Amino acid sequence: MKIKISLFSLCAVLSLGAASGAKAPAPATVHYEVKLQSLAFGNCGVRKMWIKGNNMRWEGKSQKLPVCIVKNADGTFLIHPWNKIAAKYPTGSSRSNPKVLFPGPTGSIQGFLKSVKAEKCGREVVNEKKCTIYSYMDPVSRRQCRIWIDDKSTKPVKLLMRGRRAKMDTLTAVYTKYEVGIGIADSVFELPKGYAVRPMPDELKASKTTASERRALRAKADKQKKESS
Image: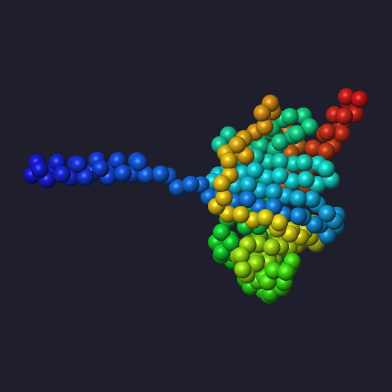
């Protein structure tokens, strides 16, 4: 009996050792870039997203105004490049969700199409790529969306987002890059050196769109320039 118990204990120890020595799975990564076009305002610049596990970095630039949101283990921050401040969103803010910033896929295309219950609705050649078109309603913004998926690479090519009339603009995004499972340095999700961390201003905590954030930040920057001049 002692021999059996000893053998059992040895096996248990070996099993624990093997488990502790096993490498943890690498966090899922994705990086994409899109050119955004508004039906009402025309060219809206470029949007870029990096995701690594729970970390995220989102960059946008419209009319020479850069906007950057960084999410890491310390929270979610809106980066103010002109006054070197990282404004921290409240815990539980929707800004920590990549799909709030852009209602497209953030990983496996097939997994995404299944999660939003997308339906095939046609075929079309876009930029010399034969594509299958899928329609779905974005569960976050409630926009009616259509996405063009390249038959050969299975990567997204274009995304059309329609909002409620007079309330949401119609947007078209053309993908220039979509990469899954690539190496992304942890430094991408670090706050810039020399930036002071501050709580998110009250006027931006309740904002519902990144456009609202941009307008508020632009107005604040203009006010600061006038005061300093």
